[in-house]
Length: 386
Image (cartoon, rainbow, N blue to C red):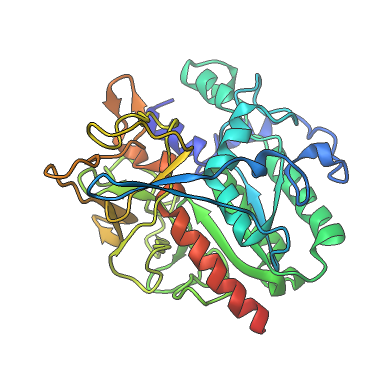
C-alpha cells in the first residue's frame, strides 16, 4: 500500500476493495455502553478527560506566563467525541481497553473543551494502526476488508447517550481523522433530517474532507450547513491543515472529495474566522508530543514544564482554494530577531522525510483548540437563547 493510500485509510477517507468488503467477518457482539468501563470519558469522574491542561503562554519576546485551566461540571451543553486512529492493539480492530494512546489523544484534542461542555467519549473498536502497518508490509490486512465495527459501536454509544444522559441538552459532536469519518456517517444516517437534529449545537470534524455541493454549504449533509459565524448553531465545521510552504501535493486525499466528484468540493471552515479570511490561530501545542522539544520554545529560556504551550501571534490561518484543493493554510510568523521559536512540529515524518500529503494532520486540532473553545462558548449562548 502506498503512503498516500495509507494516509487516506488512516484518516477514514477511503476503504479497501469491494471484493475485500465481501470477505469481511461477521460483526462481533455489541458493547454495553451502560457499562462505564466502555467509556474513555464521562462527566463526574476522574478519567482521561480530567488530565492537566495547564499552559505556558510564550510571548514573542520570550516572556513566559502560566495559564490555569479548570473544567465546568455544570456546563449547559454536552460534547460527544470520537477519537482518531491511534490504537496499537494487535489485529484489525482494537479492543475495549483504553491504552496510553487513547488516553493521550483525549488529553491533546478534547479535555480543554471541558470548560464549555460535559464530555462523553466512548471507547470503540476502531481500525488499528497495527492493521495499517500490516497492510504496508503486504500482510493479511492488505486484502482484508475495513470493518464497520467502529461505526456500529459509536452508533450504540450515541443511542445510549441519547436515552440515558442527554435529557434534551444541546450537544457538540467532535471528531478527528477516523473519528471524523465515523461521525460523518453518524450524522448522515442518524441525525440529518431526523429528530436528533434539534439537539445539534454543532459538529466539529477535523482532519477530514467533507464534501459539499460546489458553491453551496450543504451536500453530504442535506439540512446541516457549514458554520459561517461563531454564534450559529446546527452547523458543521470541517478542515484539514497544511503549511503555506508545503501545500497539498497532487497525491493527497485531503482538501477534496474522496471520489473526486467534479460537482462537489471539500469543506474548509477556519475555526478562527468562520466568516472567512485570515486570522491568528489560538493554538495549544503539546510540549512532549509531536517531537517538539520542551526546552526549545525560547532560545536560552527556561524549560517549559507545563503539558501545553500557547504562542500568541506565531501562527496565522486562512481557508484557501488552490489547485483544486480547499484547506486551512497555516503560516508561521517567524521572526529570527526574537527569542521565541520560529517553527512548530506537527508534520508526519518517515525517517527524515516529511510526508507532504499528510499536511499538519497530527496537530489539526491543536492548531485551533483555543478558537474551538471560543466557538463552542458562543454557540452555547445562542443555544440557550433558543
